[in-house]
Length: 353
Image 1 (spheres, rainbow, N blue to C red):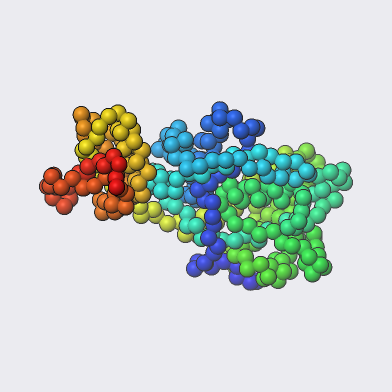
Image 2 (cartoon, rainbow, N blue to C red; image 1 turned 90 degrees about the vertical axis):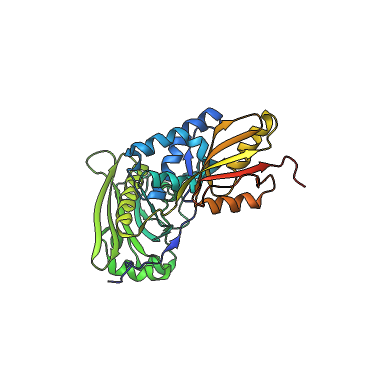
């Protein structure tokens, strides 16, 4: 048997870990606000590698502030198969803020380099009334299973490959080879794809009860494979449950790295402020600085403001970000007490030259 995954696996870097796509009924503001917590939940799951992360009370509290963690959003249309389309809310969240939340909740971060999964799947013809009428999924398939695999692998941050089923593969790989888990034939056919993991599945309509049943083999290495069964009322629930099982299995076998981000509180004292409009402008300016994850007003006087800032890094990282801007300059009239002093003193320049 070919070794498909090893402890020193160098897998594919997965993009869009901090982006979620949620099926929505429309693009109304109220709908977006309703579905954003769900979108954030998916990002927290796939970035942490913990499918039950929402059970952490600190994480559950975070969902109330989903809007504040949002970098951008939009809407996309995806095919659902059978000539049906769905509208999806695409929400991108702040990576640094998400990692800080995981750190505070004592959670790890699943490395972006994740195993590539080659899926050999035999699926039933959903339009046929004949129970044994099946087909092998390929890259050009219009079967709903193809689109649900794409959607749920994206949901969990799992890179997948669907075989081409060209003439050579059609000749060498039969429905029986998949449903009987013929790993020798499937591993031979898999060498062209440079995958790390095989997911072999056979979904059939239940001949006695209504619904469907999927039998699966997840091949990790020579001595490590897992068989499991998923049941559901439809093809979507089968695929969802299957990908959840794969996610859990892979997070146990691939590196989960502890987030080493340092969260440093700093008090930024700013002088030279004139007018209420400038206070709002300063807060917005500070919140947009690199390394700043949060900024809250502590005190406000006639021409001064003190802001509590949480940064990723230390004072030096924040000072570097401040130097890169033009509106804040060091206030040379005030000396810091010690190098460990967590207070920074700056002067606001309204219209820098």
